[in-house]
Length: 197
Image (cartoon, rainbow, N blue to C red):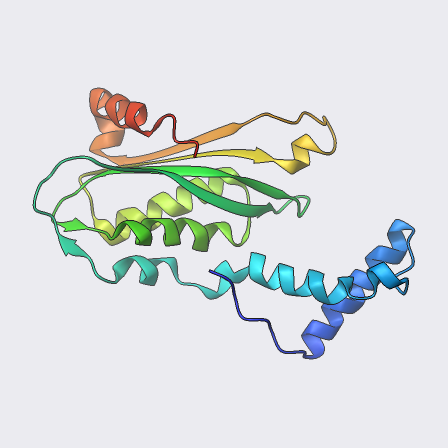
């Protein structure tokens, strides 16, 4: 969901001035034709990429919880996300898979994706992002068991430093029966695998 373009304000102007400073530091002329609009575009992009700071993930989940008719495992996979690494401000992106054992409530499937997006649109590390999504879902759904798996490529590893593109990093957080029962956890993770869209 795209965020509305922020109004020009002293804060917006300060961000744009900082981008002009960065462009000059990188060795280019912020006043050349191709770069004149860049500071405003970068400020608007960063406002959108950090919109998760203005969202309450728990509130996104709590709306429209339905009564669970059955207590079977629910698996949603292929939820794409994009985030910014807090160490280099470079993107990392991938897909999430969520499995839960309902205990009275089912979430609308789009709500699960919105919870992932709200946490991802903040400065993050993948490990914390996985735990935050799991914690929000665990509090909001109160399931008997929960597993969250994120698979991502990090541009800070692909483009700089070790410069190793094509890698993927997987993080998993589990709660309840899916943390305590090895066979239930194995089944959930098997169903969650292959989640790449």
